[in-house]
Length: 354
Image (tube, rainbow, N blue to C red; front, side, top):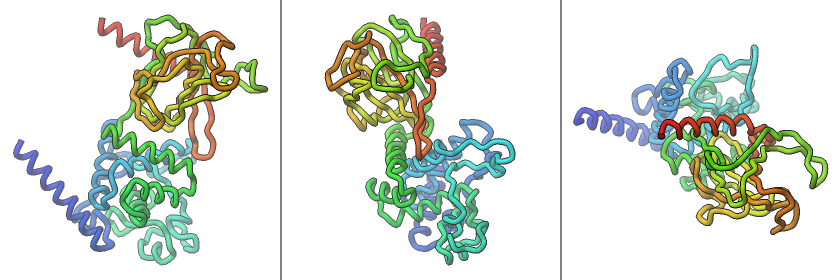
């Protein structure tokens, strides 16, 4: 136990010295500490758990070196990861790394830099580029996770230490209000739970109760003009409990002329979970609150298709939809496969408990 305490103390001392060096000079975190940051290539972490642990260690070290909370690094990194386009064939990334932040060459090297593959910190700085050396190897490599995080940190440090300062720094980087909102939401989730792994799910209705559903994706709608059904309808008695399907943050709550009393929850994968036609909400759940899988958020009703308060134009049911944000656009996809997966998982868990 004493040995573990000594190791922790030494590690904390090294990180604090690194932080001091950063604040007093312009050296990299690794160079200031006299050691290398953890490996950032995909080869260093063969499992999901190892990758998560390695990311967290990198965030912690960069946090100690710069004074920026680890969950803010994690939020930016996760946002970039959720909007990254899948590459195929010859476009597959050749240098995998822990971080998902991708900075365009003109931004990293400087727009007027004649060498758009420049990795020299001095020439990059001369041309007003974003890139810095965060790993202590003398290079500012846009494929090195430590370099990318340190470069982002130096940008954010120009705006201050508070949450609002952080949001301003994020907006100044992306110039996109939606991006700033997502990063703030992710930071709040990571800070609240204190960990990176926010996986976990629940079926939106209590399993074992009376309900029925089938895939209704893409069918036509009878009200509100030409549009398709972007979700799954789960038919169940009026007043049935509606539960959060994920760890997330309440993004919207209130009346929608199509969905009636509805609530929207954003998860850490940048998916928006939409629950519509409710009879009412759980009073303790408000916009901006954090919810967990299985937590009660409201009750099934038949609201919608009109002005606030319209009820009874269709049988009671929960409309559940799910949307993915790709940075510029947000699009719906069929939630039916996920619903079946979550339902089956909960049934298996119930059988094991019995």
